[in-house]
Length: 225
Image 1 (tube, rainbow, N blue to C red):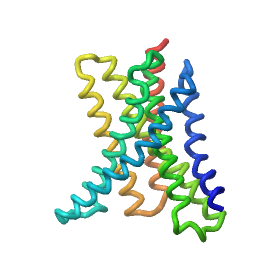
Image 2 (cartoon, rainbow, N blue to C red):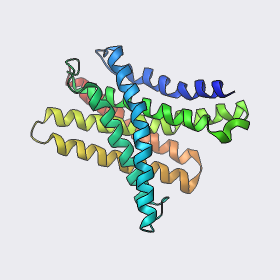
Image 3 (cartoon, rainbow, N blue to C red):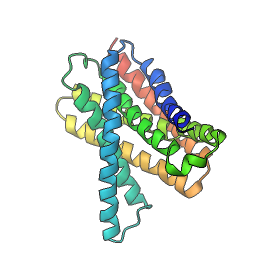
């Protein structure tokens, strides 16, 4: 049962990865995509440690750990480390030579990050008595919820990274803008889940973001023509 849960936890990340790779007109080397993915998975553990430290600081100051400020901080940690995973994997590589590559690699790192989360959720100790049907339901929710969220917010970061590279005058500003927007949207999604519980609101929210991210892909691909 545990093995089945782990396999199912892997599926959303790989499914979305195949989807996004189709957005690249000139496919990237598989080894670099894999490197970004693995880096994202490794950085997920760094994010967990940073979030635990942040939670301790918030609690020390009497601030709620389920409030908007906390969620924004936690989201920023995740967005920064997903970007860091992609950056350390490919920023000096000669294959990193097109604007859309920035989005592709950050999304690949985000999917590695999300895959670790998915496996952690479906194979948690409390899941030992979970029915297989419940595992399928949980993985389905992760596929259309948290995993998709990670790809969309990281897509936003990747888009602004690409703009920063193209506009040599203010690369840091563009990246900071992308991280800020992604973190706020990430936090809003988590607050929707916490406050409403109904996944319909969250999915509608993700669909709205998705239109903008796909438009960003098209903008960058036009720069390649």
